[in-house]
Length: 114
Length: 112
Image 1 (cartoon, rainbow over the protein chains, first blue to last red):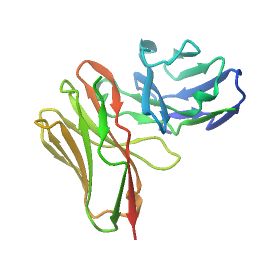
Image 2: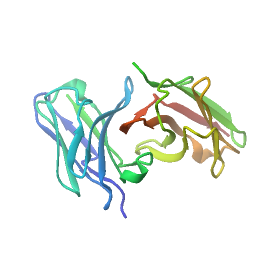
Image 3: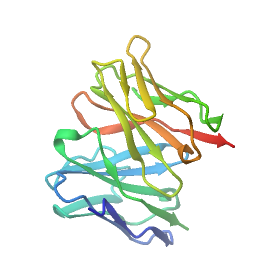
Image 4: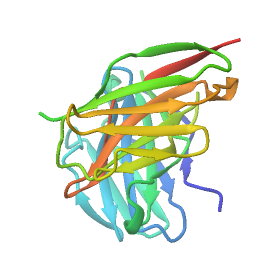
């Protein structure tokens, strides 16, 4: 398996633009997590899905952030409109329900909002 | 609020020496504790975990110790190698939550 695949690896955009981050989890995994990493706040859980259903989105910072998982092999995290303070590395991770302690992370998307 | 934190942001050790990375946690309801390793430009990678009903677990060159009395977690790396250079995160999970709560991380630097 190729692991968790995220795209793009880097994204540079201007304030006010819409940004869409993509994630393909490991086949067979039923949990998918979106995290954000910054120097100040570390790794923060934004939202997670179980069997494509959003379970907990309490970590989503604002209504500007939204996430979807239309099927078991694809998820998106959208920021609209983007702001400079959204600049961070966004990680997607997946796991199986019986082993939620072992999450497999993608390489991340480094987002810079100018 | 409850959180997972680390005592030291940077740890520098000589190649071949043993490394000990520490972590304090505050959520006594967590079922398991995990150590992740993050190399530059990559996502965190699972190293080892320990259940809350255990106090020690060993892996290949790594040992995790859990002291529930003082809510302390440590990661010991034996015979540190250059490839061990990375940021190490402790995390906690379970206790009714599916997600993980991560600490801020410790940067391990290996001196030749």
